[in-house]
Length: 456
Image 1 (cartoon, rainbow, N blue to C red):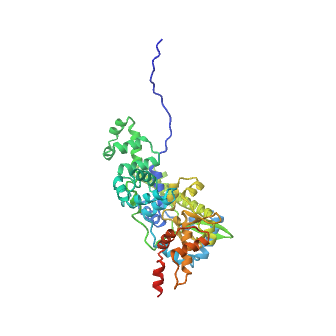
Image 2 (cartoon, rainbow, N blue to C red):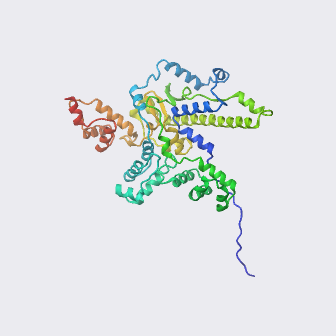
Image 3 (tube, rainbow, N blue to C red):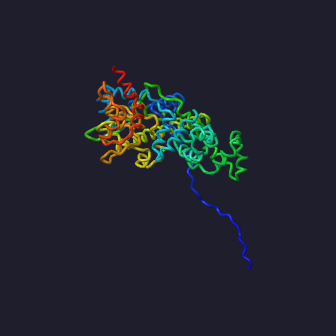
């Protein structure tokens, strides 16, 4: 009897994670700073009649006197007449004038990567070559010739930068930008094939043609296109608008109480929202209403519900990240910036059991009011040095100590970078003279000969 191979097809079951447009909205709101969120809320209140700000009476009926609420009331009572008591005005003013750019946001993530100095320099060159939309328009070969590095190394580091937030950054064209985002959310091969081969057909809504070419259903194509259209084609544009210099709004307050650090969400600047009871009743009693009107009301109620959930999710996530930062940096809150420790996004992500990109979004443009001033969340993240006792010390803390030493120097005999290096070594901080010079420049402090000249 002849045995011949027989080919058969059998159905298989697989799971794929697809990020819905609603989840994209949630992530977009998480990325917003308090100022931008206020603007968004006002816009939605103007355009959506089913969305309202609760009246004072609505809060009275809630059981709001939780221990955390009482602590918040105590905090406001102690600070309402003297806003920011215990806050360093100079630090607040400095931060108020600081707006994070795309380059700074990417550079922070780059420095938190475990890369060699050579690859870190390549990463900085890539970041510096991005246009305002977040694209790398310069061909890799030309960039390699410009910085005199192998093209293969640039490709390697480019792949790392392309994993950073915002999703799709450092892409070389629209197709690559969208594919990067789809791969990050594991959207599936159908969506990726559509981006790579059928973008013109997507523009003309030729779903049947796409489905026939890919051998899938039209419904599957529609779902994939819905995800594609929810992507951001210009990642850099997310950094084009930012709050004015005087509009720094703390998202959270960190308060020391009996030796413990309490993190309180700032509920005064970002108001709570609720659904209109009137429109909810109208949606329920839709028997005699015009179908189009009923559909409009229900659609607006759904939009309002999503927005409320997304804002609550943002508040919860930002507060959790702030609390995790406080737990990782206890000495900063009790003793001051000189005791800041090295901290990476990955540690906070692991603590909260979320992806590092979620932490990256949660710290973008967010501020924390602390006993030592108002600080941007990203201030707490830094690589660092090992002191003589084996403990870690963040780069920001080293800068703080450096500034303190210079502030106490003899104005007639200012300290050279070499002497500053030696004094830091006496504190068991081993750092090169070149790094001291770099930190001094970043602090806006002139070299010793210029400081001496200014006193004569």
